Each structure stands twice: as structure tokens, then as C-alpha cells.
Length: 264
View (cartoon, rainbow, N blue to C red):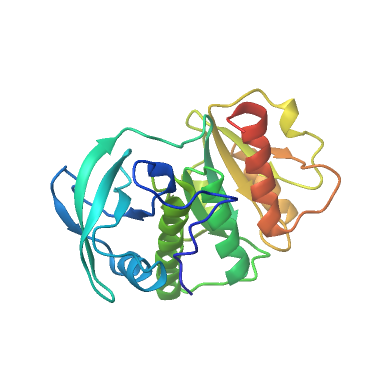
């Protein structure tokens, strides 16, 4: 699977010099001091050279995840090799007003990929994948590490596409009881768990600055998991009378949070 998806959004204008919003964006870890020459990561270089067919001298934008972005220009290019010369830095950000951390129950591969990719586009700050009683996907330690690496690459590609300059971290997979056991008390954030049995709606809550969102897998949460979450400060919240799929629930909640209290 190519994590570098087409970088288009609606009727975006064609890339042109002087408009950073329309230029191709690439994540490049490390120093981006003006004047430095940097190699793009392998996957980004492949996408730039063989998919986008960028050429020597083309302008691009690079960012390292620490905030802000820099103009750059391609100074060397091959089939899977691209080097850029870094230009001026801009303090541009696209982070939402409400910082949301997603605690997502493991779902089947394509569904989990979709959820994390779109959650990044909707501004999620950090991602904790958790195995629950009804999770379809079960990951042994080595396989879990490979999936986390895959998800982190997917998150980077989503940031490149959507214009974010801060890259959310994808943390190692844990079980829900283990995660709750290690994070029993809130540390300044409001905590919610999505539940069909809840009576509280998002609009009933006070406006949060930080939110921890717990969303379930395909089969939802077992009753004891909801009880466990409640004992750790989570408020059960219902997203209307309709049953949402696992890949829809977290995204609907994120969109609603930013519509109610953020920048949508």
C-alpha cells in the first residue's frame, strides 16, 4: 500500500511559485536550516519522482514536525532519490483549538487505516491503538510493532496532504485494561467514551481545551470495559440515535468537537 496518497483537496489550484498552500509538501526529519541540502525520505522521494513526476528546480514545501514549514527547491532527483535545498521558514500552523487524543479500539486493517488517516486530517494530536475484548484484529508483539510503524508512516502522509506541520505520534499497541491501569487519573483533559447506551451528548459538556476520546472496535465495547473507563474518569457520550461504524464514530466525534468548540 502506498501511504503517499494523491495530494489534492477539493478544487485546489495547480502548484505555482509563491503560493505555499498549493505546493507539494514533504516531511523531512531533522535540521531544516535555510541553505541546507536535505534528502527526502525514501517513500517521499519515490512519490515525488515516480508518482508526481516533479523535476529539477521545482519548488516544494518541507516540514520536520517541530512546527512551521520551509520553502525548498529540488536540486537533485532520480527514480527514488530527491534532494532539496531549504529556503525560508514560515511559522504556519494548522492545529485545532481543542487538543484531542484518540484512544482507538483495534479494528480490521483497512478500517483502522482509514480511521487514523482521517483522524489526522481532522486534527487529532496523538493516537493510542488499544486491543479490546471485541477487537477483530489481534496483534502479536512483533506484528504489532510493524503495524505501528505502518500507521506512523500513514500519519506522516496524511500530514503532508492536509497541511499540518506537527505530526501526531502513534503509540505502541496495548490492551484497554493495561492502558487504563497506567492512566487512571485525568491530567487536565476531559475524557469521553462513545457509547450507544449513553444519554449525554457532546453539546451537554463544557467546552474542553484538551479531550481524550475513547472509540470502540467493530463490535463496540463490552459492558465491563465501559464500567472500567467510567472508573477512570470517562464520561459516556452518545452520537445521536444512529449506530455508527467503527471507522465513522471517532471521525464524527472529532468533527462535532471542532464544530462545537473549535475551528470548523
